[in-house]
Length: 126
Length: 129
Image (cartoon, rainbow over all chains, first blue to last red; front, side, top):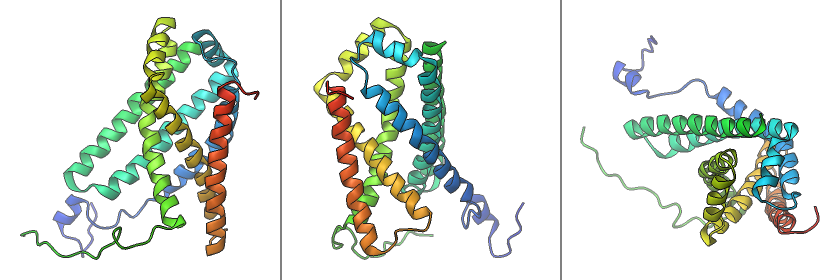
């Protein structure tokens, strides 16, 4: 319970004032970005090199253990990076209750879709 | 407390667009657009995992003119966000803040993103990788 003399209890409850810590968000945004650079280059090159994009070819491509590993790591990292970015955008343009609800919704969708994507890759590869 | 309407200084209506501001907001716009694209990416992956029939249904959907347009849009958004992202990391190292350097790196980003997009599509559509 913070006892900041200059902040009223209402202000504390409303979440007003400095958040005091945002460095971890900034840093993880950079870490996820850097991790995705080699993965993106590899996966994009590998994907555009496919001879055709019919079901058998694409399925076999993802089923390859190296591709599956890189793709899984890329997708999970990308969903994390995306959530961090979307969070900042929401915080910039929305305020109050709308902001809180939208932040929760964004996090929920990212986690749910991220799991769905990861499961799909595993299902194809295993 | 009654909410009092106070006047604001004009911004978008008076400030001339520059390579700095335009590329900056484009980084955000492409980012948000890519985040929306994650829904389609998940749909694509789940369709492949679902088997040949599911894949065929998804393919028909994404192969429509609006689907193709969207995918082309996402590909440019991806390469732009990628290149400008690297530009951001370059700034994070403390380099490249002189106005001339910002303009040059900006143009490099635009050109690199465009070239990568064109190259990727050339490979997809049958060119040799």
